[in-house]
Image 1 (cartoon, helix red, strand yellow):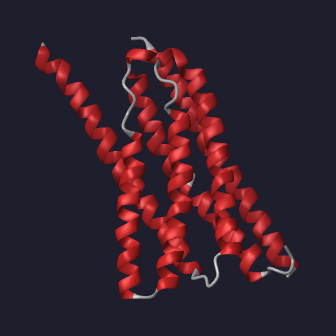
Image 2 (cartoon, rainbow over the protein chains, first blue to last red):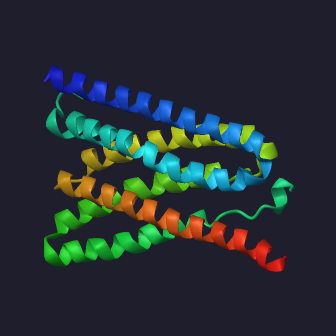
Length: 78
Length: 139
């Protein structure tokens, strides 16, 4: 049962790390692109919105699976 | 171009499209399968729609190149909020919803992600194409 909690912790932490790296890269490119071509900033912001939605989809599904492990598979441990 | 003169993109329409897809989807699941699966699908979809709407509202609060650092700050806080809201939503569903169909929760979540991606691309990119075409016609 402890292994289930360790698995959930790894899923949440690695998912958060992946999302942080992805969003950080996207945000950096957004600032860089806005500085290079200010007239494209609104378009870049929309593209950032689309990209961010795709980047953090998989980590959040991982968080959902971790919550399932914690609260359904091993409810007595939580 | 000042930030106030830049129109806000119709991100609220994406959330409305998601809700407009989720409710008939759950009714179909209810008719085809059972009430438990339909309710689980509805909860999974709601876990996707509400944090995404929060993120969109935070991200498009500031606009324009001069607000780039403010946009990045609001994107960071929006992303943190989205992550926490999603985790709390999944935890609440798995704790409170009984009886539960876990696969339906994730199916509802993934269905809303697909609708979000297609809807965002449809609404936002189409609007940008219209905006880029209009000045060319004026010239």
